[in-house]
Image 1 (cartoon, one colour):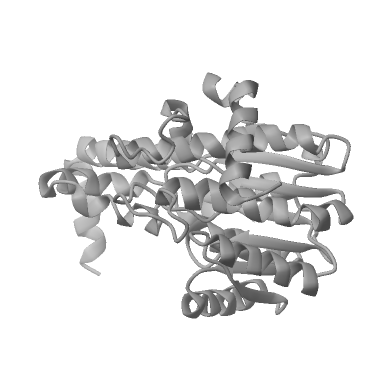
Image 2: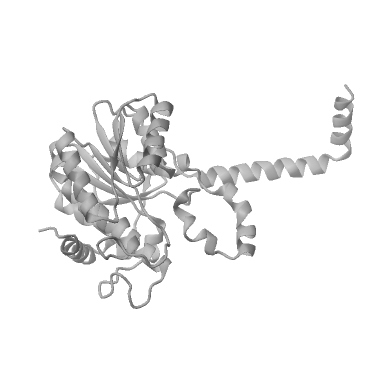
Length: 328
């Protein structure tokens, strides 16, 4: 009972302190809410629909899977690590109440694995309503894929480029259907190094990442042109800065003092659930059915960087990519 008098005494003695703390709390909450970005408002059901998500075992991919499964969709998680994928699938089933969630093996750093997954899906699935190219790697060392491609360009772009093309007939059969490519704001500082696509002359992990994210935007744009009139629409997006495993390669490389300074800022970074909203929006929002090839951020259209609107570069990238992955 002595607690209440003590509280009243503190309030009367330190009103300015309390006001400052309150305003600070409200301010931090407001900034946090603003940083969280847009929210998908669509209540569209997906019963009878089939959706494939690459890298759906963690981060925004898993949160996207939970949301879409909750809407009634059959969800396919296409992942490299099957143990983690199976655990994630169980979590998706429990959190969504939807048991129709399956796992398939996919290593985007292997063209053979991409083709094997596509063959499996074509043989086992009657329809594919949404393909979400979500998986990716960021700012890794100078690694190579199984086929000798620079890792970030190979996984973030070429693997998804091949997978999408291999599944196009099924997507066309399932119209209206969608292809959603998770890109990044990083594309705004990117360029395609056509004369040194693997950056063998001067590799920089961030430069490579930006190139791969710009490739996602250009691929979406060119794909929209090629699919015009088919009933298949395409979307690229920036999910935001998110607390996920994507930063596992570059975070340890940051000096300790910078990590200490940056640590408090993590409070303002999007959660995976918040980061998944624009992906979900592009996958389900009914009003987007007649839009294609555009770029989105915070659940709204956004003008891509000038280099992301370059139709000549988009066509050139398509031709180069087709040659690299062996598409006719």
